[in-house]
Image 1 (tube, one colour):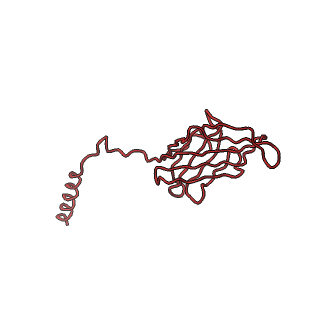
Image 2 (tube, one colour):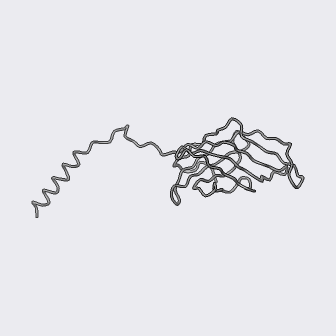
Image 3 (cartoon, one colour):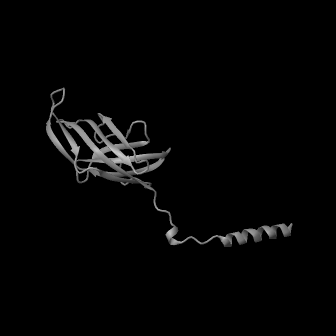
Length: 158
């Protein structure tokens, strides 16, 4: 019995010695995804009600354009799912611009990437709506706007 234990210990001990020590350059990078937002527009009534938000985005994960739309989203909006995908967004006040997007990619239940960025827009107040309340359409300037989404706790209150 002692011979078997000694043999197992010798084998395990020698295999541990054969594994190279991790190097500082071997540290994994924080996983992330790059989202490019384009064709962003918001339609807002004079009373401040947002009736529509829509945009397209390309993810560095699949390099395929997807569309997102929120009808009567509220402001700041609730979290809105982009079509049938695992991508979601939330419209809010920007820090340096009128609007911002918080962007999420669900990778598993309760886990995913998220990020945030201001969306620069120019608003045209010449529009009108069916109720005659007047409306403005704000469209993205200098697209695309890049949002880096990664695994990290949210830095702002959602």
